[in-house]
Every structure is written in structure tokens, then in C-alpha cells.
Length: 536
Ligand code: ACM
Image (cartoon, rainbow, N blue to C red; front, side, top):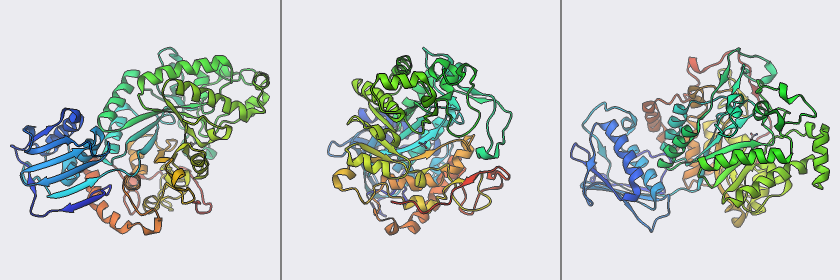
């Protein structure tokens, strides 16, 4: 049946196939209406069959089963009846995805190539995810990704049973969400005059203005579209560093006693800007205002506040920052950063939400509810889990998918570590040194797609796929935790079928033997990292 990600158990029953025809019905418990709507719309488009409403006990039927966990499902295919039992709405959408996969690659098209011969193979499938957080970060700040491409990407995540879309919405190079009370954040902060092409050391630039942002209605649409497919959108408002676009829009947010913040534009370089927020009360109030609107838009429990890579030079030189450090009784600039993060940690907790941030936020000590995204390797995540914090493992050496997939001259803008499809398949998110109770704090894993070197959905397809397929199986399936024990050959075999589904969806994945000619970027300089093998 070639299912990816591999289900917990699947038994094929060869004499029990269920053929679909114009009379086949689809019915669901009211609580599973999202899965029913998706299944009818998707399968009708692909097969040309109407899948009209039917009665319980016949056709394709979606039911709730309280004995199952919320994301778990059981799919039973018999000649007269296909029963999808789910623990909750999410379990039903994952089961519906499996049902589409069972119909074969043509079921991923949007118009039927044929109206006959659609058959669900007789089977008993039981399934549930290993991790509750199966995430992907899209960096829509460095390069804006149009809304239609975000929605398409949501569909691709759903097809792989990934359930968190982390949107990196703000950075030095652009501010991408409308905030009604601060219109200049997008009026000015969403636009830059030009961009770098390739690694920053090459100093190559285009002369093409770049920008874009999502209106609040766009974001409501994205959030609802994702929710109907089992996906939570986690917004990231990065602070106090990675904020030059915000400072360019509102110069009073910056360290104006050190630099002329009124003269700043949105940054046109890659890298980490020194133009960070000041730590005044007024700046805290400003970002509380931003976050009030963020909370209205995004119902997710977690709100990501970045906290990574905040250069401290301006705070060292700023009389105002130094006064603030004294006034708050802090030891140094590092403590000033953790003061800011802890302020918003409490602010979110008071509103029933939880802060998640990059592993730097651990440095000043955190409130118990806050979670850590471990990106500089496993170390931050290990320390956080041992201290009782929830952790999302996304070490850059393993699951930064902007990094190159092969070591060769044809990889477009090769940067970072080589992480092949097989490396990703053998990635184990839970480090062996965690005992059982600390390991339970690893709530999941996430692949990050930073976008300095990808300026379109086509480029993102290339870097993301097929590695994201392997990542999805790592995040969902109960694979052996010992990387060497994983059956990569078996995965590759199932992938052969799955790539046909990606072809049908129009995903421009990296071919196993290297990029298509139009996927190369000859002459655009990258930054390969050699380095020792990453430590588990
Ligand atoms: C990061 O890559 N700076 C989180």
C-alpha cells in the first residue's frame, strides 16, 4: 500500500477491496464535518465521482471513537463499507489523507484522468502519531511568500500529516503581518529596495524592490484553512533582535541614542542586524499592542517570540540601555534580554497562552510554562527538557532545509551542512541522554525553511522535497530510535510511489540524481559548512 508516513499497523486484505463508483456515498458524524468536506471536495475533483450523502453503515463513513486519542484513527476497508473511526477531528483528517493515499497517485490530481477503476484496497489500518508537534517553519520575512502559495503549502503539510505551520513573520528584512494600530509596520516595514543574491560575503545584489504582507483577513483565512486540515499556525514575532524592519517603521523602537534610527530602512543584507529594539517601557507597551492583535488572529496555545541572535553592541553603547540595566538591578546586557523575554512570557501566560522561543531564551531562566525550540544543536533542548520545559527539536545541523541536500557543484546556492534525504530519515529527535521523564518534554520536532536563498514556492519545493517526506515519517511514525536501525531502503521503495503523488500535485522536488537544469543557480555563491558530524 506504500503508505507514507508509515502507519502504526496496516494489514492488507486482498479479497476485500472497495470499488468506488457514481453511487458511492460519504457520510460523517457532525463533529467530523471538516474531514468530510475535504474528502468530498478532494476526491470528487480527482475521481469525478460525486460522493453524495449516504446512510450510516454504507459507503464511506466517518465516525468518532472516544476510545482513540484525538489524532488517532482506524480505517477498515471492506467491500460494502469503508469505516474511518477517529478520536477527534484531527484523527479524521489524517485518516482521510490515508484514504486518498490508498487510491494511488492519480487521486492527488484536481481533475479526473479517468472515471473508472477507482478502488480502495481492502485493509485494516491503525494509526496514531509519535509526536504531537510535527512542525515546519516557513520564513516569509526574508522573502515574502504570497498567500496562495502559503495555502498550497498548508495542503502539502496536511498530505504528510504535519500539524504545525510556524510562520516566521517578522525580521530585519521585512515585517509581514498587518497590525491595525501600527500601520507603518507594513506601510514601511514590509518593503525593501533590493535583496542580496546568494551568500552575503559575495555582496551581490539585485535591484528589484521586494515586499509584501498578509492582511489580517488573509491571516484569518490561512489559520482557518489550516485548522480545517488539522494544522495549527504558530506565529513568530521575533524580538528583541531581528527587528530592523520594525525599527525602520517606528524609529523610536530602536537605540536612537546610538544610531540615527530615523535614517534606517528595511535591511537589504542577509545576516543578523545590529539594529535591535531598545528596552524601554514604551517599547514593551508597543509590542504588547502588537501581540494583542496577534492573539486575536492566532488561536494557537503557543506564540513564538524568537529571542535568538540579539547582538548586544548597541545596548553596550546606549546610555538609555545602561540606565535601564541599573534601574532594573540587572548585571548586564544578557540579563536585559532575558528581562524582556520574561516580561512577555508572563504577559502571554496571563492571557492563557504559552511562549515558545529559540534556545537562547533559556539563558536567563524561564517561567515553567514556556517552551524552547532547540536550533543550535540538541544542547539547548536537552538543558530545557531537564529543567522541565517542553522542547521542539529542530537542530540546524539536521533539519534546516535551507541547507544543501548534496555535496556537489550543481546544488543551487549551496549553504550549510549537507543533509541528504537519508540523513533526514535517520534523524532522531529525542537524544539518548534524556531519561524517560525528561524525554517526555520533547513534544516534537520541526524542519525549518529559512528563505534567504529561496524567493519562490518553486525554490521552496526544491529544498523541502523530498526531505520533508522523510521528516514527516520521523515525526509521525514509530521508527527505531537508533538511526542505523531504520529501514531507509524500504522508505525509498515507498517513496517511489509517493513521488508520483507529488508529481500529480505539481511539487518540484529535487530529483534523486540532482537538480533539473532550471533548478540550478550557476554562479550564485553559497556558503558550504564542513564541520564535524553533529553530536546527538
Ligand atoms: C535561527 O536559526 N536563528 C533560529
